[in-house]
Length: 311
Image (cartoon, rainbow, N blue to C red; front, side, top):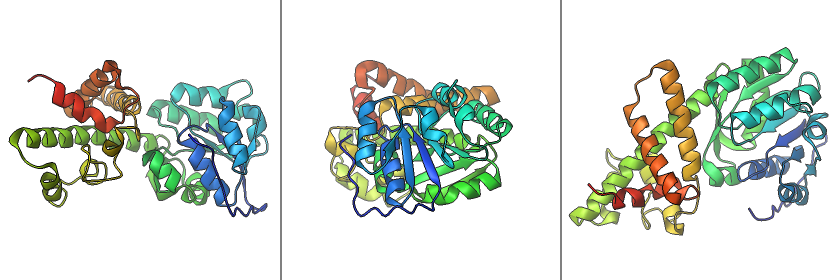
């Protein structure tokens, strides 16, 4: 990610102080939007270049998790997986041992429901509020401040978090108790993975039948086949100029991230004995695509993989 640039920032020292842990491709633009909204942001990341970018954007860079969170009113985490969230929160100099009483934790990572609920219970036992608030919208949504936040947690914690989330997103939805944000995320992304495969198959069939891609898009995007994977994120070049298909399938939302979410969905399905045969098949297909060396490709690139498979 390039250097963050911020202009015309007016810091209101009366606003709550924010700690932001995890300043990667998603966390960095989210933190920037908080700075633009006037929040005082102190961030921490294991990659020094990410800290430099935050500092250049008007934030403060901390040398440790404990330093970042000790004076924070609200702590936002955006981390790769449940094990990282658990480590950041429960570690020796982690959030639970370093945050001040009554601080609020907003975990925007995508993790398993069990870990989310365990962390919420532990936060409460440590005198802290917590919501799980995974996002949908990808890097483009993070940069534009148009993310959807799917939130799980107590009403009081959600109401406190909402103004902050509105600085980073366009749709802030309370899905219920602790872990329900993560439940909504895995259900949504399972549907996304399935629908992208369906849209890709439709375009591959159209190619085989000699039907122009633009014609198929013009028809299906306004008919019963319309969906986000088609209308907004079309997997073939041309119909939607902003889709990754027009940029050699640069992510976007990578295959590795989609596979992670599909596996979380399948783990949840198995633990609850929910029947998700299409979700299982989508997981198998994305796993094969990933193993073929495409982990860093946008997930819409599955269209090429499907096209190449022998019938």
